[in-house]
Length: 225
Image (tube, rainbow, N blue to C red):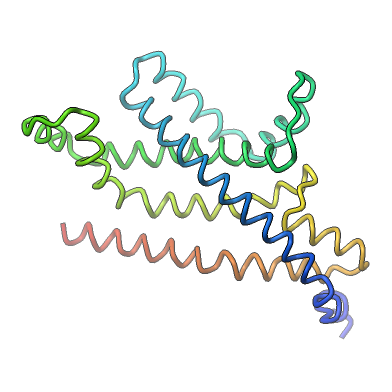
């Protein structure tokens, strides 16, 4: 009974629920912004690495290697706490968005590169034989085929981004975890943290199942080809 009153106190959960919902809204907004910018930058880095001039390729490789190696928390702390020393001050939301986007872009670039390189070179040659310029062949012929390869891992990375939004609480952004910890301190009970965990599960579990479905469909598609 003591366990239930401490961690599953219904009255406290009901009182803290509006606070948690505000945090969930901030978490969803942060995740969407990070995924949007991260995917765009990742595709640009991928194209630079595959088809750019050699100096640009080296920069793209360096970017991917660095941000795949650095923990997101380290990147976030550097952006939020170090940049003010050089005169750049960003809000906690902007800092978290940039940090998550930069790391996601590195992983997106690698996933897209693997997807494009998985397409036989003959597809470019066939498109060139039909008179299509290189970039048009890439957009009309190669990328649609690569898309079915990269969608499952990209979706998995997006789910990871939503989980990593919890790190934004380190820079005092009022996301779901920060609101839960504030409610815990206010009500002197850890039940809000359990409520946050339940909300995370309810929000992310369908996305996890979506990843599994996309992976299974991709395997079936390759099995028929």
